[in-house]
Length: 127
Image (tube, rainbow, N blue to C red; front, side, top):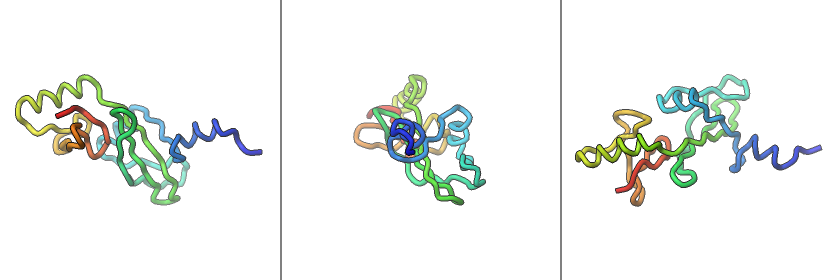
């Protein structure tokens, strides 16, 4: 007998990909650009395939296992007030804003009027 549709959506997420639990440890590894391990148990590493904006100001990263080819999605939470304030201060000082989560070297790009990180898809402010 097939599983109910609601259970499948919780496991797979709305896009049909396996949803990674966005706990602090996983997000910290992602922001530090460390390798993520496949949750199925094949021992493969997850390779980032695509990063996109999700929701109002959050982001979504799509991964694929290099061993078993399963696809995963990681929902990145929207920017906090502290992170937005850091970006605004950088703009007011005349500096090029950098992603507060990825650290120095990862500059924010402009998409429309928003300042967005290309590695996490999160909007941190407006120009």
